[in-house]
Amino acid sequence: MKKILPYFAILVFIASAHAQTLSPTVIASAGGYNSVGGTSLSYTVGELAAVQTFKDSSGRNILTQGFQQPNDIVNGLLVIEKGADGSFSVYPIPAQTTIWYGYEFTEPGKVQVSMFDIIGQKMNYNLDETYDSGKLIHSFDCSSYPSGNYILSVKFTAANGQEKVLSKKIQIITH
Image 1: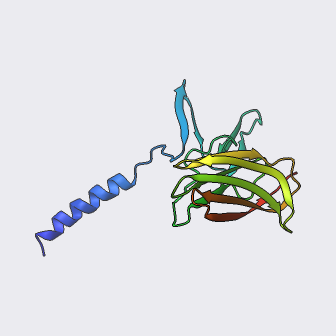
Image 2: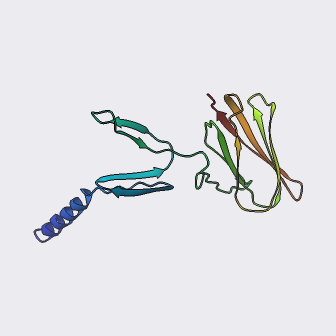
Image 3: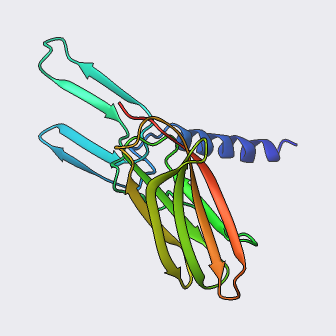
């Protein structure tokens, strides 16, 4: 037991020495870091999580910190895992200005995407295209739609005529 104790003490010391280090590390889709004359600036592009603003005692210097996601960056945000009937994903929910959606099917065919209001009336968004393979991602401007709940539906017709319908409930919030 006495021989193990020094090794354990050394291991604890090494672990605690590394635990006390703090480096500017953020996991985000993009960003950078720059330092000039004692002032440093780091920025990230990530998902909107929290924003907080600070002012110094003079009120002239303002620091706003947090993560902000531009509407046109969706790289990696749609995770589509292909199931037996295909897959369909929508981002973000709720949406304010742009809705991104993606789908993937197990075979080639034809795809029709439609949007319906919550009582089943067809809205003026439609997409018809031929599907060959792989994940396809599309977007559309939803800022002209009134706030509310909608259904985004993907109808897939295989070469043999078999149809599959995948739907997602979406929420649009406009100001």
